[in-house]
Every structure is written in C-alpha cells, then in structure tokens.
Length: 82
Image 1 (cartoon, rainbow, N blue to C red):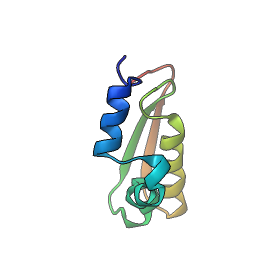
Image 2 (image 1 turned 180 degrees about the horizontal axis):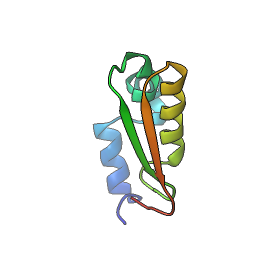
Image 3 (image 1 turned 120 degrees about the horizontal axis):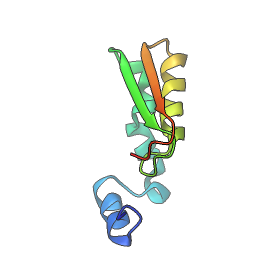
C-alpha cells in the first residue's frame, strides 16, 4: 500500500493542502462543514477498516447533515478496507 509513503504524503500536501499549516482553509473547504448548503440527499458508504478515509470522517459528515436536517443514508461495511 503506497498511501503511507512519503511521496504520496507530499503529493497530498501539494494538491490538497497541509493540515498542520492550513487547517482553517481546509476546514472551510470540508463538505462536513458546509453541510448546511447541501440540497440533495447524500449516501455515505464507509468501510469500518478503511485506511484512506478514517471512519470518523463519515460519522462527522452524518452528524453535520443530521444537525442541519438534511436527508442522508449511511452504510457501514464491516471489515471493508477500501
């Protein structure tokens, strides 16, 4: 799995941003923190063992959608990695 390699981490920082240095900008762009603006139903599918997208992200998205009364469904796949 190459996702933990320094080359991939550096690529992510260049393309998406550095969470340590650009946290406010990245939070502002996060779909979870723009849930109030979502106007369509959302389907969240998350593997419980996913290494690329931490399950906490899916739960946070569901929480935020719920707080704003948005329609969503969440499917967690037990043991799924990606």
